[in-house]
Amino acid sequence: MANFKTAWNAFWSIFKSDELAQTWNDIVANPQPALPPAETKSETTEKQEETPSPVKSTTKGEAVHALAILQRESRLIDFLQEDIAPYSNEQIGAAVRKVHDDAHNALEKYFKLVPIRTENEGEGVTLDKSFDSKQIRLTGKTAGEPPFHGTLLHRGWKAENITLPQRTDAVDPAVICPAEVEI
Image (cartoon, rainbow, N blue to C red; front, side, top):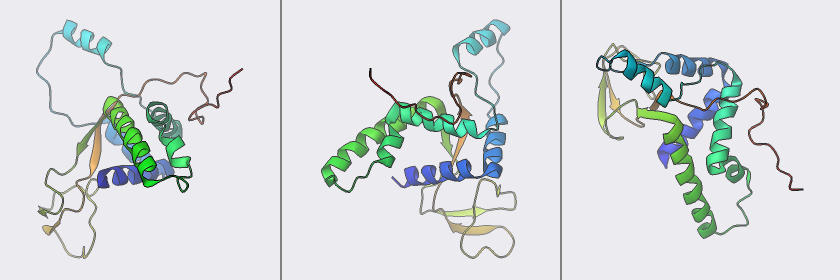
């Protein structure tokens, strides 16, 4: 559950900061994957037809679009906006399990998330001079020069790929989920 909390906090940090959103978009637009084996032109064309192309944009609309997907797939916003005080722990637990499973499946479907560090949380790590300060945040007594020796508090996450479905111009980019009225 600690990973969910960190991912959630990262999401809102990106949502609220144009600078962090731009950094996120830069990472997504310029991933550093391993080079695949050479393919023939027909194989490349076939793969392009099978896989949706990632959305590339620097607008806040993309953050709203991601929220819309989490709402559609898991009703996450409905759950988070609900006053849970009147419900029992058992009722909340059952709701959390369903929302968690559905949100997890949505993340797997649209985002290829990978940990930044592979060590287990709580293990000792050494960071040499070449560590990437955009991917690793130092806490505690950070004075001095690398190498730094510390304890991994959180592995971190990065998106290697994002494949959000395209939104049409018919959708207001600020609308996460339209209201529904049965007639």
